[in-house]
Image (cartoon, rainbow, N blue to C red; front, side, top):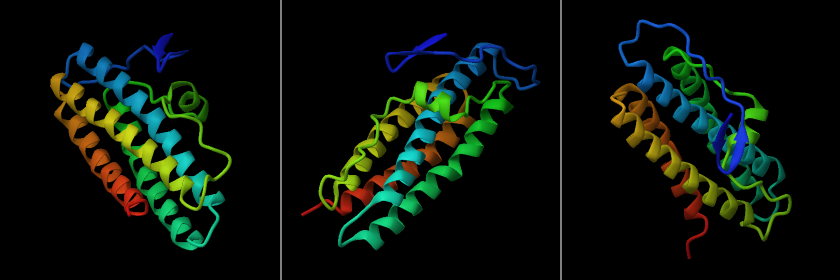
Length: 172
């Protein structure tokens, strides 16, 4: 059991054998970091799809398309992240239940607060996830795991771009 986001959740602690030259401690730590981010990104993806399905208003079509494109960008990172976890000898904790237990994101609002309410909600969540990913970059770099830091850097770029697109809809 581990404590994450103030919640206790089960983690898969055993590591598989690998010839990867990173130390077991470094690999175990990197896997833990990536599993937390996998949970957060899975949650962000589902929240973005929820906004896509439920958005209403004069800007419906534009936002519907934007949210779908943002969800696709996030989805494109899930498989490489999970595969990196397993390449280091870890177990990818990728179920919806894992994400629900481990994600620090707030539950997505069931009612849209104004035409751009979902834009605001997603902007908050993209910023929060971007911060978590950047911390993951720093932490995995300190572990000597440049490959994971590089993978997370690509995710960070897409999250920042998504945040930019969302915030462009809220600027005056």
